[in-house]
Image (cartoon, rainbow, N blue to C red; front, side, top):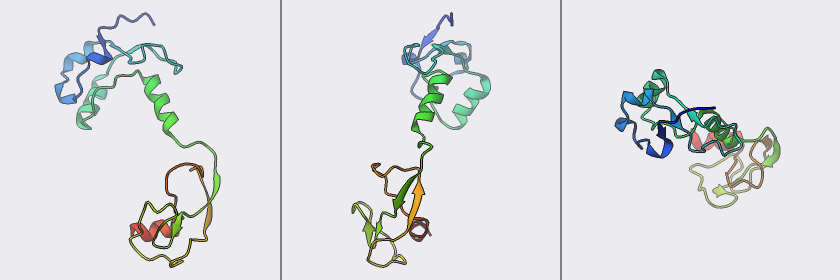
Length: 139
């Protein structure tokens, strides 16, 4: 971890089009500067294939080391828990009234009776439809 940082994350260009191949010779300081709980490496380098991928996908050069980026992805996933839920479909719209259904469903105007298990907790803001109601909306 005795890296000699040659460029700080705050100095990186916002667009990949503004990044030249000289970035491959730089040691980039992680945005977290080793002060997070994600086993931050403090610094990282880009490989030529990684830079090629960012250019192809039109993505900016990352500002965090691999460990920090990986832990951020892990935290954004749903938990490994399943909750019993009922379908949020209520005839013409969703239970909370945010979404208006595009087509008529098998249960007509009433609430959908289907129950299922999902990784979306009941207190989350997402609208969760059963497979039948979901298929009716997207097909």
